[in-house]
Image (cartoon, rainbow, N blue to C red; front, top):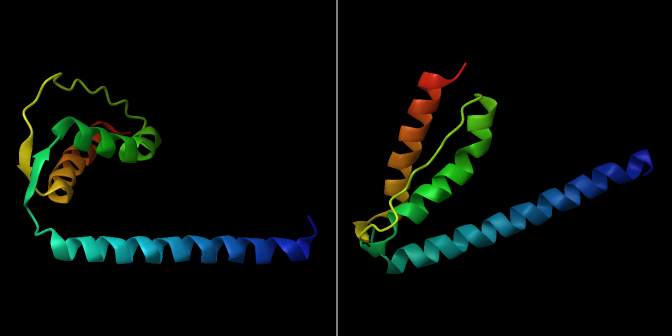
Length: 102
């Protein structure tokens, strides 16, 4: 690649990502109007926890912390705000990582 083509390519990718992010924000804002906070019914705790672990994996690796999850095979669904629940789980994972990290 010639030196002059790198910047336009990076800018194009940046604007494409920004466009997708704007679309996602609009989608989430629209759906939030129809779903009051804290009313999600039948929330799967294992799925919410696995999502947080997946999102935290790079931070855990950077801190040289290995997370071994042992989730219950059968849990009753819970009612609550998925985002708030995941924030609590994320805080627990980060606190444990900070306590064990190098």
